[in-house]
Image 1 (tube, rainbow, N blue to C red):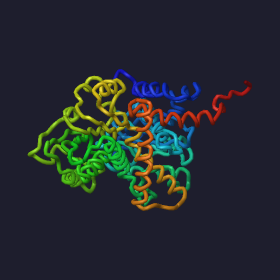
Image 2: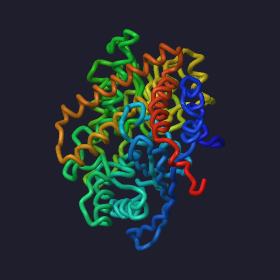
Image 3: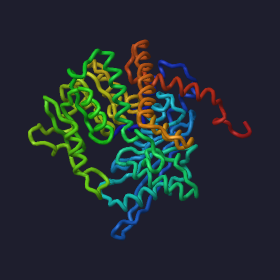
Image 4: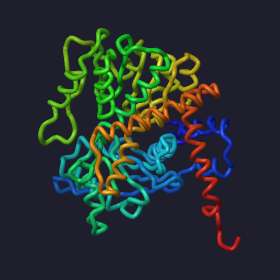
Length: 430
């Protein structure tokens, strides 16, 4: 990749700054992460050998509160990627009006190549390395790509061992038995569904006559696919990292979910099945082919940079809802806008995960826990309210929904940075 992901993300910031009035000091602060940490994590493998993995944690901005963001385990993790994800988290938290800043973490590893015991040693080793960089009042990690409640439980336990006290509020996305929140495991997909429903109502689209393709059938993608299926939308294509399936008459999403679940053995940490194998009478297609399908709604729910300047012209969907972080580059934005495609951005659409993570943090600190119905009602109220506000900004200023979302977040971030004053810039003796 020739262009820095963070540089590309900053282009969205520059576009939004044209529509808000914040100080130059505030806008300058938002262009750079506050703190970045790179660590080496030695792990004793099951065969007795030692491997060292690179890990990262970035706190981008904590003006509105302690930073919040997931930890991903993926072979392509880099510091630049983690900084960009922390940037997006900063704006995501502000867009949802959460009293949090943005952060992110990751380890460069293919977790599917590790045994469960190796994975636990890596997870605990990562926390050993970053323990002084995080905390319930400083920075609160959560799950992301290829991390899950089990891994979050190991990490919370390791932090508690280091601090010599139980510290459930340091990590969110934990198992329920360790202080996790009801509804957290499905929050990203559920929140995206609420936004999609609210925005489709603006265009008078009925579910029964609306076709959908979902790229990425992991935690978030499978959840929104199931919710859309249950609501009557026609899901014509889904894919995972191995490829996808396509049927113009519609797919049976519950059957595909059942297949994915059934291929997970009792000892496996990750699902080893692929949606490519679910049926024989449907067309097999690649992730790239799925993106170019002639559908009403495209849901990129995999990784960043899936739609770029190279393939944007091939996109035929009328509406795109970004469930993944950064699936569309800034250059591709221009092409999609010229084609009249509405793009609803990640910092709104996939904010359900961090919103329910915030709920979990609140529950951990108060000791009072909510039902799944209460969690989802609170989530829907917040997601729909902020989606409506962003839509109004887009209409009032005649700008794209993505730029409107950044304007919405910038207004809150600018107020907080201006109210904070100059103490961060103070130098003794001046």
